[in-house]
Structures are given as structure tokens and as C-alpha cells.
Image (cartoon, rainbow over all chains, first blue to last red; front, side, top):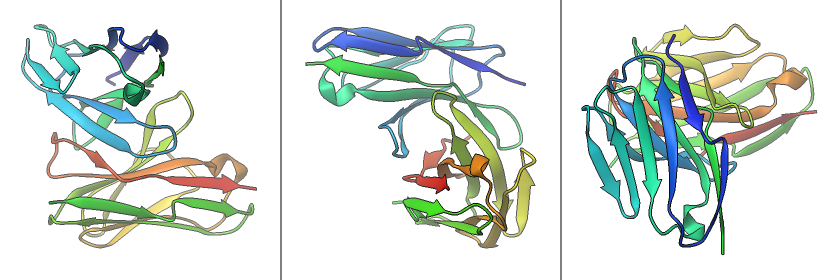
Length: 110
Length: 112
């Protein structure tokens, strides 16, 4: 089965600093999703990547899918307290199922 | 636009009592529907998914069941709750296989 590994598990940064979260797959990714979640709330869809080398941005958040389509990175520029939360990557498997990483908890210190 | 709602948001139930979590999607037809459980620090576990009315696939053997009585309604149930059923449950939908999955607000279940 396809496994997604996220790193780091948790991250504490000072406001204004940049940060990167990684998501690595054991198999080729055919669709990679990034979500943000505030603790105890639903997941908010950020962006989806499908093509090798693809890069998308949403405000100060940029996500990339590597050429081999086995790793994605989420980069936040000039972090703010509003960026705090849990970031999860998800990927398509087959038959309508998706698999998710365990999440990265981001804390932004003002 | 499409929206998804699930309720109740929080629920405290005694062991052995029944459970019913309901989820509805609006603004689309024939969605794929999902129930996930999220444990702290352990990501999302797919419990059930449905590609159509009355079609339910179970991913994990457990004390829970799911039903889809209408196209845009997905219900998570249990006849007798266990302590281990406590957790955060998320309903979700997607248009087709391989499309983006959108999540509901989540339901906190505490079994006491």
C-alpha cells in the first residue's frame, strides 16, 4: 500500500521566518493534496499537484511536486500566527481511496 | 458551490449506547462520500467510502457501520459504542475517483 511520510512531525518557528514541510511517498504520486487543519476542526484544502515539477502558490504558501513525483514540499514564506495549524498531505491510491500523512504541527511564535 | 456539513459537532455517549453521525453534501450530485477517523498525531484513517446510494465499502473491521440512504447523505452508526470508538470523525466528499477530497467540520465523539 502507498505510504506517505511527513517531516518534520512538528515545527516551531518565529514569526516572519520561512519554513518547509516535506511529504514523501513510497510510490509514484498521481495526485498530491495539501490540507491545513486547525486542531479539532475540519481540513481545509490548500492545493493539488499532479504533474512532475509542478508548483502552485496560494498567498504565501507554495507547494512543489518533484520531477519523480515521489516527494512534495510545502514552503511558507514569512510565516504568521495565522499559518499555525496542522498540515497534512494526501495522495490518491486506487478505487476512490486516498491516503494521508500523519501531519505536521506548525506553531508560529509572535 | 458545494458544501458539506456534519453533525453533531461534539457528542458524549456512554459505553454501550448507539451512535449516529450524519453528513450531507449540497450543490453536487452523485458524490463519492467518505468517513475518516483521526487520532492525535496519527493522520487520517479511512473507515468507509461510498460511490453511490446503498454502496458502502468498509476499510477497517470495527464496531461501526455506514449507510447512504440518499445520494448526498452519509451516516456513521454504531449499535453499541466502545471506549475505543472515541475520536474525531470527519466526513468528506469528492466528485470522482482521484479528485480533490473536501472535508466537513468534524465531530468529536467521547465515549465514557
